[in-house]
Image 1 (tube, rainbow, N blue to C red):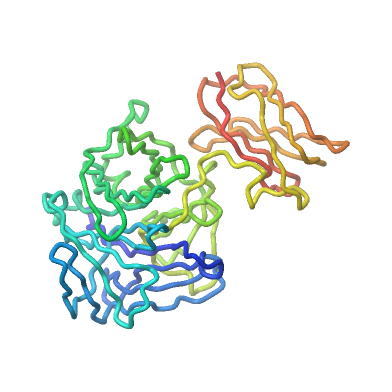
Image 2: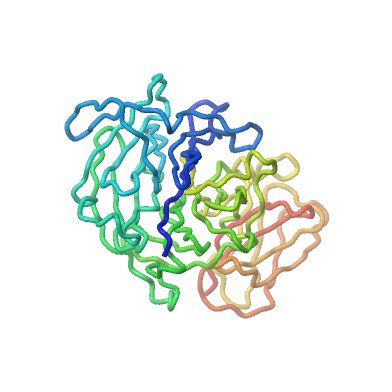
Length: 395
């Protein structure tokens, strides 16, 4: 199997509104497979790439174990990174080095200062082997970092701040429902990246575009499905959350650009246009969270006719054969679609409804019989804009 040496890009949430969608990352040097230059660009795609750190230059490295500075350190290849918004730290693990490093995104020194600590749990790995390389990392909403080896036999947890502590939680466990689609499979489940969700789960997007939902407490991984709508040659080497909670994925070869992915349907679409974004990128990370919890109309992005409000579905759980009731405190007019998805993003049922008379309440009856379990229900308006997306349990 080809050794996974991946470029790294970081989408960072900063304090000022003007900067909160700035993208930082490790870019490629002219030498093949050298991902060392830190660049920045706007997550809105309205600026060109800007070099923050030239990977051909030296930087200052502060040894956290010995509390001493090492000047003139050389840049390293990076395989995994995560960003902590609370401490404004970009954490990463260099390729073939049993070290956790970080830099403060607010660093304004002319010569960048990187911090590093060595950890015995990392030193036990033979990092010359592909299966032991750490290629996935993320930081959750509590500021706890997670990193994982290619073979998912080691899930590392680390604290953020100036004195990180790293521990090995052990191997990821396949849920019985995963069948042949194991998180430990070389061809389907190695590489890629990991993203923290707003539901407390970790989401592994593998090199081959497969999705696993992982509970960090139990270490159980549930296979969710595959990202749909990507080019045939696209491999998801990097993944992160966007400010609106959608997923962003990138490929490390082919200059295929960036794609955004709906975290409910797992449908992908091209994010930016323009040659400046047709770059090879991977191992994306961000200070944002993947939106997997139910979204309501009270959020910034869910507005009907310019008015914010609340929309609920009843009953939830829903018994087989019963009607689902939608109740809103703002009027809905015109054609709408009600779609039901399973956890893999497959559309189970799609109904068109017409709302008249400033409807604030309406019922929907599903014609199909469903397996008991958890689904997603989505209401869209006549323009295809999402009015509401929420979880629905059918029993």
